[in-house]
Image 1 (cartoon, rainbow, N blue to C red):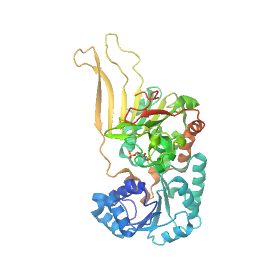
Image 2: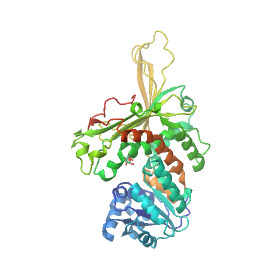
Image 3: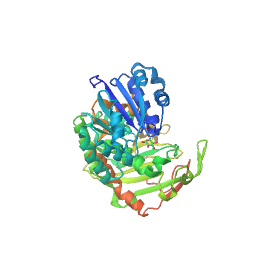
Image 4: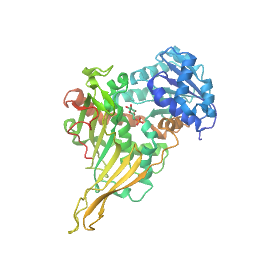
Length: 459
Ligand code: BG6
């Protein structure tokens, strides 16, 4: 534990919402149970008119098996909830009356409400050292992200602002650092001389799951690619940082993202948007996306998005990075696949399948695979493919536990820096504009299929 052990308060705005129940509180429960958090007062605020029992039940359910572990039990015992309109300064002032020790405010709210709540905080005396913790999407475009950044730094310094991307708390994602920079055998090959292309795929066998209120306004591009997958891309493409000091490390990821742009510059060639139609996903029969509750078909929200990107650095120039994420896809593939160029030539006399080497970093199942071509079995002059596999060990904490640890420790390493959040919008904006202008028609794929035809993916 690197926090000094003195009392802290976590105030969740949007405490009655889905994100708080599904991810934030379970992560917090695990962190508390691991003894890795300071003595913590947990305050919830939401629009629902909940009584103490209802909130207590919500936290207890979300803590699950951790609810009885010492520090988690203590937090659970003292937690409080107030119904509030968090866009009103007077309501926010009332919430701050219960704060004990250093305050972290978690905005588990849609971006527009977060921005309003931040504006309201300008009229509130925030305790010194207050941390602001924001969920993605951070703003709705580069201009709104820049405006939100300006607003936030009027409230508290940048190092106290934690823009959460829970993929940066996934141990498998962080394994990219160890894999690349703690081994001699991969890093020298990770450049345009040896790599033919990279596919970064996060397809899910989840559909809308009752999240229309958020998802139908976000879509796959903002929900997954603009945020999570670009963070993974940065880890895959950054230069070796001198240390994991937050400043040094985040300079490295920022530099990689600043060099990233749409491959060829034409959204018609380098992007794809699609949405699922009715189909069978596992044992569930899903309706057309547009017939799901709460969906407005006029928005033309995509449930699957693809982008081809270029990372225009000396190391990566000429290597296409194909990013894709989709909902309701049969094969829930979650991996980064680095495809190497073929050997210059095969010796005469060797024959058989001689596909390229591929390094696969799996984000669930969490595993590493390396595809090789070798001789045999059988005829030693006939080639065959084999795969070396290793499982990544699970992390001690779930991703939200990991990122919350950074918040309580004042360690911004796993938080997205303000300029990086703006870069991530800058990268996708030519595409969102072209989609909005109808230049790239939306295509369809049946729920439970492998996704649309004409995918850019290579593997
Ligand atoms: C969230 C997205 O940020 O990440 C979801 O809003 C997505 O749509 C989820 O399903 C995937 O993350 P995880 O950790 O559940 O694999």
